[in-house]
Image 1: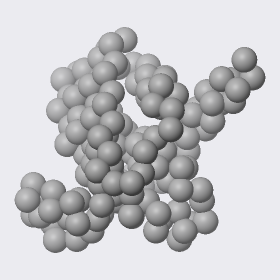
Image 2 (image 1 turned 120 degrees about the horizontal axis):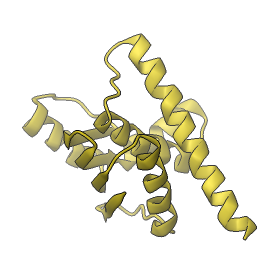
Image 3 (image 1 turned 135 degrees about the vertical axis):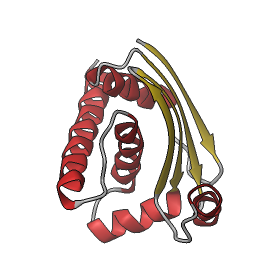
Image 4 (image 1 turned 135 degrees about the horizontal axis):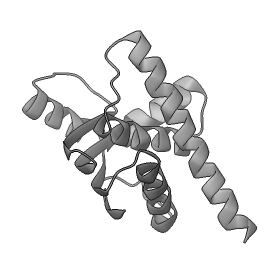
Length: 148
């Protein structure tokens, strides 16, 4: 499984251990049987994501994530833009840790690339269940590193 992951930080938010996140993303990609995966995660503010939403999707609304994905079979290439401001508000609204909300959004983008949708209630429930599985995988990976 070939994996390339880049992180772009256009806000004060930074991932402390990029290697840990890359290992988790690789585990997720393998879980879905991907052959190769090239992901760029960009962490942005609300206004930057709004501009992307208006320009590329003709939506005039704030959003927490936009995924631009081109997949050919088991090969995924994606640019995933995440609003850290929306992540913070969602974390507060749903009473979860900010870091878990970031994980949820990162997983959400990848899940869109492997075929998960979220346009109706049934699809949203499936998406949320998968996000929860992937977040759990992250914490298992993190715990394994700490136990070494």
